[in-house]
Length: 330
Image (cartoon, rainbow, N blue to C red; front, side, top):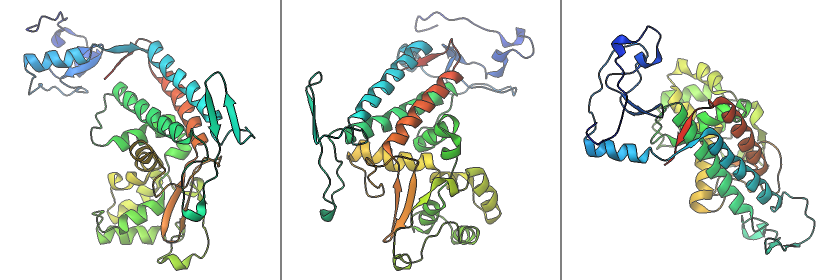
């Protein structure tokens, strides 16, 4: 090779039918079974165009030299899980009853302070709620990135779909395959959503009762909190809305994984607070809820639920990965 790297040449014409290496375009370069350039063919012969320059190829290979075995990778994330559980104990979800608790081994003092809702305060009640929220959001998003790597999926600007797909696969599909119709309807009514009036009309015809959204805030005088379990799956709502011209990429933005990325992950990592559409949930346990109150749609996504999701997704993902797989680290 021009950049001085050793490689093995495989002549596809000499391979038997059914050999997996026949399923790649020619030429394709693999490193640790990951595609450096080229693509998978799935039986259709094709050639690789736009080959990288020697300089670009060397840059790509150098970036791919950092890798981790399955054991190393999941051991790292399992330690993150244990750490987040310890941090969770220090949040207001913990059974600690004292107003102040000193942890001498860590030289940490937990300060409990009730938020003053009369002043509109949304800040947490303990010192560790923001840290736990930032970390669990980052953990789930990074796992989704490496999961996409094992599938050779390129999400690029569709990162929220990457997290949504990952959670639907490994994070309890009964929750993460659901679409929130209230979120979808409000998005469709937004003038910047690029949803055509005929599509909006179709949505309102299909879901006039199940959403329970008012046309004006005064139509609901009190809180109208609802559970995710009553929401339709992506498959079901797509089947109902396709006759009105809806496409999956328009509906999937209101799936719970995409909502989690936009609201929870982005609000905590970029703003270090719950944002305007998340109800503070450090005092709450259970599954996600949502409500439409005083003209606003708000979601309750409990931290404890997300820690459980992280553990479930980590275990499921680990069981899916082959023993000889190596993760390419950024």
